[in-house]
Image (cartoon, rainbow, N blue to C red; front, side, top):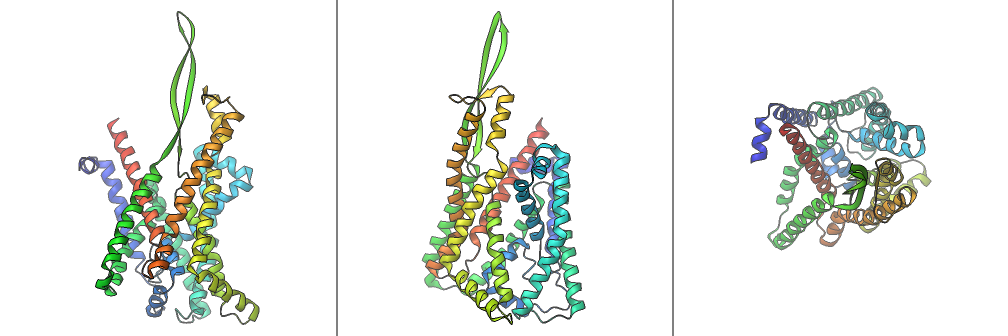
Length: 420
């Protein structure tokens, strides 16, 4: 209560919080405006029985379920940002721009991501509308209507991207993450309503067990997200007290257990969605070979255990990959050496970098396995219990908790600055 009182007693903080709420309300209103000329009755029934589109609906902020003007949400922007992050591995120039050119370099890097969002939104809009047409989820569109709808959903994506960046600039927290979070929260009443419609008294013990499991998972996510491995660091400085002497100051280098956050899950979902999107697109192809391949892929990914196993492996792999991209042990060791610091028992330079890399690889293994288990937990529960209402709860839960923790940290940082 003291924190809430401090937030609303500070005019700047209060305005930032109210601005975030205002923008999120706008995004929810946009997500309820359907594209003209499209009936959503068949679409709602189709989405209810398709977990693939349930994943897409998360990153669309709930806009896909209403076939709204922002049906793509911030998905193309996230995809563009991921591609740009991957390009830092292939292009030394982009890596230098992102990591070494300071604020100006990062702004140019983000601008390239914005530019990439436009063609991605056009491609994703065309693919999604065409796929829904072939699945008979929406009626067939004439060519002018198709072009117009692609233009509308592309404009909606660019608008959502702009609103997210307005939150970054004038509000508090990560705008894109908050938009996704708002879509997850907005879907809760409908999900609960569907659950209670099909609720049976005999399911009460299972419901209690699932509630307890959810609380345990939430506690585990918070614990792992906040966990750090402190690596002791000593700073040695020369000082004159009578005669020359060396003064040492000990501190530690915090290595986070989960350096990558929820990005590996987003990577894994993007990779898994791509073959599903293509297979469903070609399932009605006139070519017998393409149709057979598409049906084989659909059949394989429809198996919960195959899907869950691939999902888990991709999350673990991308956790290591993204951690390697974002955290460079050699650069960290070089910075320690430049600042006159060393890790006790290890020589500055290469030996220090190898030790940091060794520690990072060990703790990343635990973080990667935990992320993978949380991601596939709904698949496991659904396969064991047979409750089809549980589809993407683990991913949604992880994203929601990560966003809330990040928001709390930024609010606390703002309040600390106010005190200073």
